[in-house]
Amino acid sequence: VVAIVEGSTGRAILHVDMDAFYAAVEVLVDPSLAGKPVIVGGSGGRGVVASCSYEARSYGIHSAMPSARARRLCPHAVFVDGRHDLYQEHSRRLHQVLTSFTPLVEGIALDEAFLDVTGVARLWGTGPQIATAIRARVLAECGLRCSVGVAPSKFLAKLASEAAKPRPGPPGRPPAPGPGVKVVAPGEELSFLRPLPVGALWGVGPATRRRLDRFGIRTVGDLAALPLETLVGAVGEAHGTHLHGLSWGRDSRAVEPDRAPKSVGHEETYAGDHHRGETLHDEAVRLSDGVSRRLRAAGMAGRTVTLKVRFASFRTITRSRTLPAPVDAGTILARVATELLAGVDPSPGVRLLGVSVSNLVAGQAKQLALEDALGGPDPAPADLVDGQGHRRRFGDRAVGPATLLRGAEGLALKRPSDQPWGPSG
DNA sequence: TCTGGGGTCCTAGGACCC
DNA sequence: TCTGGGGTCCTAGGACCC
Image (cartoon, rainbow, N blue to C red):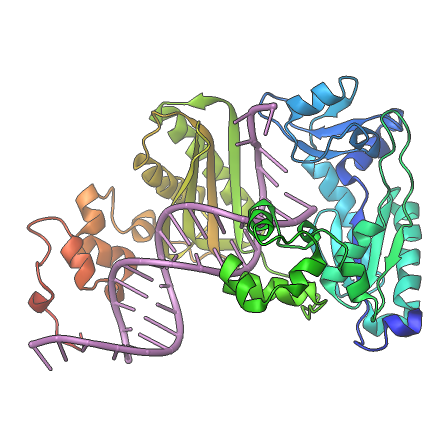
């Protein structure tokens, strides 16, 4: 098996996935919880399950389920509010163990990572041997259990780790331990894949599943039999091409350690809806300060500020602005976020507010004066669209005919032929 | 059952540049 | 005078993942 795994494609990829991570950490720090249905997540009226023990899963509880429903399914479950810092600390220890095997570790969540162990066979042995060793070391050094998938590609390794998981027992009974390590060897890809439900593939969520369902596609094997053009027509170019390849076991994505973050944000769902602009203004400032702190702690800054608003109806909108230079200061983020908020009518009721920063760059922000970042002190609404304000904000190159035509009456020119600059200007 | 908070990636249209 | 095609940036929204 080993020779085959590392033979034809030359890659040995591991996917390490902690078993019920948050719940397991809670049991670790409070052993009296062992063997009980433990549910981690917001227990408030609008909370959902973030993680739960296998004992809880035996009642049909799973992550993302509203906590209220989970409580109905298992009234004697122990509810614990999430402690992110604690999980982060245990995640760091996990990564120490993983990187002691190879530097090629790509963390994809606190409790999950890919490893490319192709090049460390002389040091640590074959993929399956390393998988077994990792499980032992993680248990010994972190006190936690994990499941490991071994395969020639990332997505097969991920599906394999799922197959290695424990299974919940009947309600009130202990879970059945899983194999812990599952190997998908080259040559076995298609026989492993074909019977799986399409929803098992990474990237097939409820919406895609509904679309595929209309074609009678239930399993990965069904998907593989669908002509590429039909699939692309149903789910789009990039997605269709990607899924078609996956259904035939093709996935050449590399394990990428040290991926730089693309955005940093905070959002909060309120216990009750907010209807007043002033309250939301204060919330936007608070969220901006939190984002700023995290940006600065990471030594990053970003140019695009995005405000997210979810209404009582669950309709969600975003409003964003891209600044001429990266910023990380709370004052500037708050200023932009509140300006964006001013364009939103909160009267239907707002259940969630979020602030995030993207277009990130590493290193110290080139600190702009507030005025430079925003394009002028306390700009009037007209200033946002008139040519001069726009030019101050985004630079000369951003002012074209359309911008001027949109501009405030009396300030903007009416026709492109009235442009005051020449073709090269 | 009434839907978290942290993210990533893709699409599509408008504007703009060359 | 009218028209063009490729590439990039920006905004908004949506699907998806853990």
